[in-house]
Amino acid sequence: MPLTRRATSMKTQTGVKQIPLPTLARFLGLAVCLLAASAHADEIDRYVETQLQRQHIPGLALAVIRDGRVVKMGSYGFSDLERDVPTTPDTVFEIGSITKPFTAMAILLLVEDGKLKLDDSAGKFLPTLPLAWKPVTIRQLLSHTSGIPDFEEVMGYGAYRNVWLPDKVIATVATQPMDFPPGTKWHYSNTGYFVLTLILEKVAGEPYASFVQKRILEPAGMTRTRSSEPTEIIPGRAAAYEFAKGRLENRDPLQPTVAGGAGMLRGVPVRRRVAAMRDAAGLTGPQ
Image 1: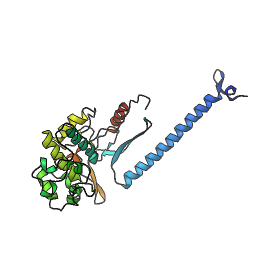
Image 2: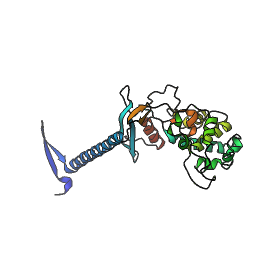
Image 3: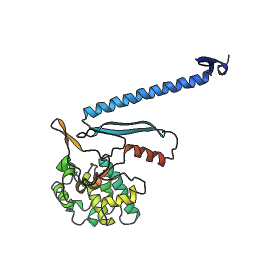
Image 4: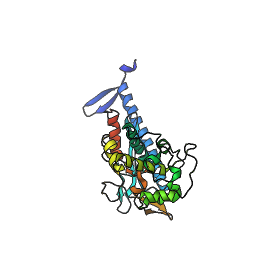
């Protein structure tokens, strides 16, 4: 007998209901998929929770999107250990060096505005830079080929917590020789993006955070991404920690005057980021 005509039966209170086999097969297939997805989700949860412990991470939020569908959204650990505040999809985290693409985009907007060129030298806009730094081009600063030493390597990771003015940061890094002649090699340099921040502020005539807010974040609808200013009230802000002396400790806040365009922004919560990505892609189906 053809498969489309065969059926199985299920007793109900009113009698026997015939269920076509194709329908039953689809139902069973869906159930299997859901169980597989659940098992996979559990596997992700176990992996993340293991890494939280292994790498001493207080908390995180994540989303996995496949073919426009959210296949996993989760939050783990705590955003504030002292107050036992769990991490949620709405927790706001520092985004660290993900700030750099925003800085690069801001510089390219100034290029588009005709206010600077990629092959202009840094010294053209910042005449008080150390002599060895002046010939470095904006292109080389953007591409980490400037040869200017990385302030994190010179001053340590704690450099971001110093309440220093730009002149002191530059003077401290300038005590070290150039890593290589500009344009001859590649080496990651936070200092390069720090210098780009100073150039941007000089050319644009306004603070970095203000320019990025008006020219990039607001047009993109990224209303929750902002400067990681320690004195401002930022709803849902995750507390900052570091692992030292064999334990987690409170960490001093990141100072925008030192981090600049190398890492001063805080990101949009993962729930809003997912919604924005779906809107940008024109996705309207179920999540």
